[in-house]
Length: 351
Image (cartoon, rainbow, N blue to C red):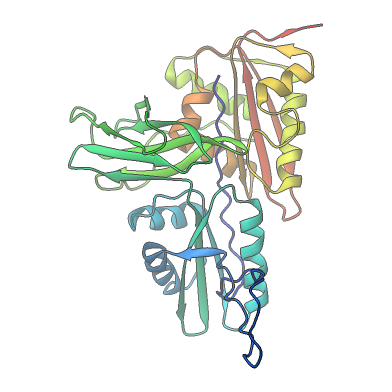
């Protein structure tokens, strides 16, 4: 079963950069006459040199970059952790900064890494979620690894022609090294996908070779005001069949989009029913194969383009096995759009 997710919402707000946390309790007795020393706060995120470099680069700019520009800057600096968030502000906004960082920590499914920079009065904090890593091992080998809370890792590799391939990763505890054949035309864009507390998602991304300027795969020209037309054109370009619009799938997709917006989390397993297949069974529907793509961005257009630009999500929504689709969207309290594309192969009602 294919279940994949993508996080596209980069937070771009005012802030001052500081990482704080609740004080750990110290139960050791203090000898008479000795003044008690307050325990050192536990950091919400760990400082990362590459993220510091990204923060320094962005702090020099006179504008707040859009999400794709932020992610590109992170990837060019060698940051593979995913997703990446940014907060912009001025000196003195300490509490706003701390509150934002705590909010990210609350919804994150893995430890945070961060980098901070200041240029004049302008302050930038970059935060990323570290659930896995990708590192070159020689010229043509790549080592992939996930943290203990994540399982079932695999790679999706897209070459310069836009062709994507899925590669399994063995040895979850210590990761695995895979060979990237020379015939796969560089540059390669690699995603490491693994299943965590909220379901599967891309946990790390890496370019091998010079990062391409602009789009690496053609975008659908269909109006994103109609997700069905968008997906039809996307699938047609790969030779996959058109999909039937399914009312029951749309109902579940809409319900899950609302759950994503309300929870603040991006994932497939956010309610007691579990993954998309289990959620459909609760509605009395079963299918041979079930797939789902989830995105959150400022607009529906940006959310669908994020799905389109992600190799793992593009593989899911263009899978030729699917016959039916449902589309859901919702708005969160920040005005962002949560979008869900739910797909199934020959769904049918069950008792």
